[in-house]
Length: 145
Image (cartoon, rainbow, N blue to C red; front, side, top):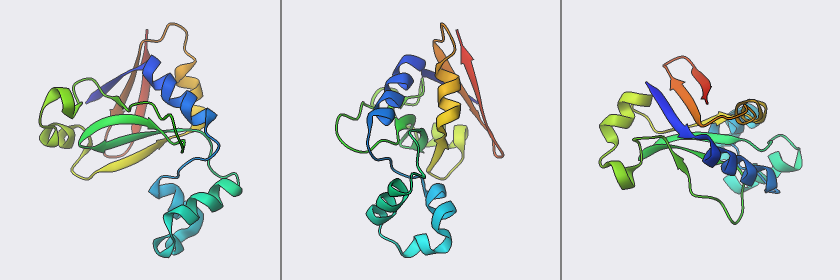
């Protein structure tokens, strides 16, 4: 299943991430940094330590919960509205549970789209759509002009 996102709105999310002074880690980044100790740590303390260590760069998250969307990992004010995949906005497209499960599996998730990948994708001249294909084993990105 190919998920399609307005690339200009994705750029706005990344701009927010770049302008933020602190960034939030995904669950995977927390485990990578602290191993099993992360389970007993306060989330705000994890955010503080990882940012102090410079281990979290501006990036984006691909999120699947009640809808499928991209958002900035930047913390703080002025966060732009999330960018829903076309056809996966629960505010416009109705009940999303079955549709989201078919697209990305049964569990809610938050997948990191790392800094370097985002820069490469949003730098394509005349790009209009960011396509993301999610399978059980990988996430593939494609840009459409």
